[in-house]
Length: 305
Picture (spheres, rainbow, N blue to C red):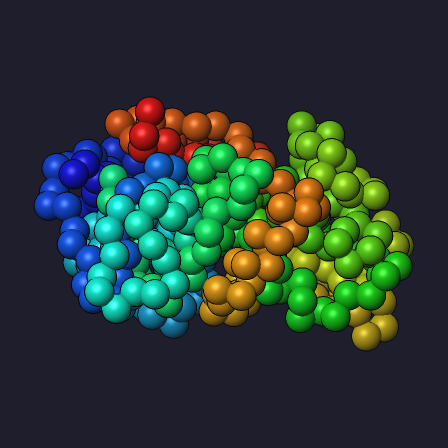
């Protein structure tokens, strides 16, 4: 099978297509024929060893990723595809099931034509009203947004600000926050204002022109969906007992969260945002685009043409 691999850290050009052995599922695994995956900012950071945080955080990241070279040469943290084979102990899924899944708990590896996943991985049947490309964008950023916003116990009428509202996490966060009947303010750049409005944001702030921390407005919840601001920076914009959330504090992913997102999607309350789609052979171009920091929503890799 073909896979996009990186055998050293560096710029997009370290990623290359390689023919490797097709995996065989273990007794508790399913074999997924990958139809679509994504190139995320997280993939880009791991590829370039561009790890935010202090020295301790970077050290822990190197243990996970590999000190001298990547331990896991195939990136890709989420996918959508069809189950082609199953191990003898698998009971949740059957051959032919269309699924979407996070691969974070099984060593990434979605940038390949096939991927084996444990049956108890964060995986569910694909939403009926989504294409494989759309479904592939949901697991990691969707769960990240949902799990963080749930921590705030958002009530109807609460003022919720999403910083980085046009990114992969932010586009889901805006929509999920609206399902709580909150009043959502989206912060993004000028070119993305209409996109965020179309997702249901009640108010918009152009971060290139205005600072939400200096406007005098206060919020019940501020969610940093891109990991670029701190609670101390937002102190004056939070109401008394207001909650600051950041995607950098993401909790472990859970299958029930993915199933809940599927229900929201099938109810027409949440959709995915796809900026660009590339074939696997052009994944280096996809990385170059992600590295610009200008993507809106998600960048998708289509493996089956």
